[in-house]
Length: 565
Image (cartoon, rainbow, N blue to C red; front, side, top):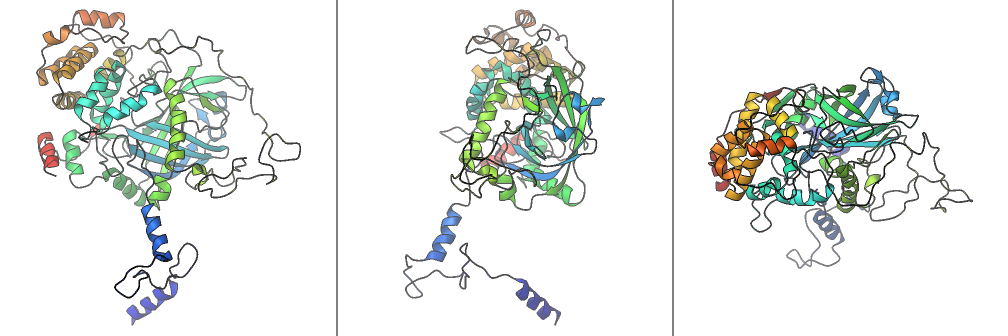
């Protein structure tokens, strides 16, 4: 009796199937044919609509950051930046009041792999936050590691190509391709100290830091600007996997990090991160041995301390993966008033590339989608019209006037909230040149000296395993770079891959390199130069790192199993 009543209730509550024209579908089992055996007829409208939409259900996956997931939550401001009112540094409204909450969405991702690749691959993790503020969207698009492989955006396609499968054999991340680029790019040395350490494989998305990576600016009501770096510290702590542990995890589940995040949110264990900001005066800082706009560098935290600004809490998982994850689109150019760009060369390139990618991938009207539209109550009034898949018409005063200026009405310019001119005066000749003060090895050495012992051992093991699969040319050049960083690091890797230091000493610096006085001293005593003098003991990215409690699978066994598949 109860079963019959339940069936009747379901029958009453179920909606009838229709097509997108609103036509009821009374037979969804068979297409229209001449007789029961066919042939099918051309005017099969229901079938053609259904199958043609199915053929287009997937949009192009992201070239990078294809594998990932989204969660929703809020940012709660401290009302201060460090011990000072937020208004001293920025007029952005989301920071001004203690306890003010701003809804947000965050997308975690891996970089190099495809949409269905492993979430425990050795790879940086995307850490992209979309704040839906009362002044419109702010996208803070970063990674889980504080630096990057390159300092000029013109090299980004080359770098990514080196990380992607071989175009002939389609071998995934061929070590010869990866290290061919890295060995020829000394600026990458700092980044490999992170990527090939345990921090290159976070245990999941909840137990990792986040960084803006690029240098930005904050601007206050008086038009005064400062340079800033953004940091996210997880209240859950940092936890990482070794390569052998990652092999164990991905043997049964490729989407382990997405599942972990969803499970945590659904059981009420809401992940939380503290937002901290480093601040530097807006000038070139010639007193430093690096350029503050160089994203292969961090700012020493003893000189530029971390200042708390608020916290992020994630309390809602996605309801629809495609709508909320595949269609969400981030861009480094998405800034609210009081936040601005710096002259960081990577940031300028990313600002064009990210939005351009979304127009290709999702469509020219991607900002009208709910995932990307500003928060409810924020008015979007533009003169942009039409284009593929226009979902609505943006707000307007007069629908006949789609231009500005106009004497007849239409949209008008907003009132400026601060001085039109900010920041230092910039002058120079047009050129194509790398920034000065490259100093490619010092911060890598600082990182080595402040790593935990288990991280150092794992770094050596991972570099040795990867370089052991490379050609001798690349092995020797990488040993040369590592010895310039630190005798112990370079010596241990060289021993593991059976490269003699004597054979490395004959190598000349790369033609594009700029060596410091300390680099030249080490080069003259390669392998016996002693440790570098550290520039700081408070290295960004050195918060304690817990080794995950996960069984190991030997690397050789993992490769054998992968080959058998």
